[in-house]
Length: 139
Image (tube, rainbow, N blue to C red):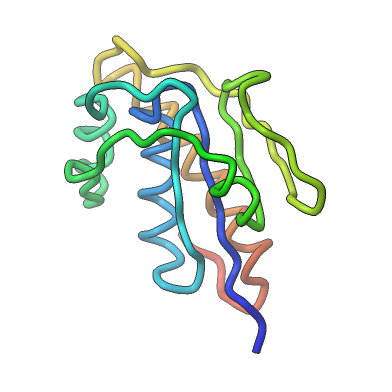
């Protein structure tokens, strides 16, 4: 039996971009992909504009909390998607890395967060298609 893939989304505060990405991946892949998120310097709480933007699409991330990035989380992930954590993201051989250049939604209102959310969704859909090629596309 093939182990299911795991994806770790990493940004600095683990309060916006990585939380939205984790929410989309959980929503789209269900139990077929293990989903993790973390931050190199986690915030105290999740970005309320990110919560609101995701709720508009019927995805509730309000119960999520920023988590600290650990070596173990990186080392045991199939894919690590970084979103602006720079040199603080540990690198391990055998782990596939992606760097998604996205605006940081910190301090933005929901109107400004929506385009970031929509770009994250597009990229997560591509990631699901790559990791679960037998699945149909999500739209």
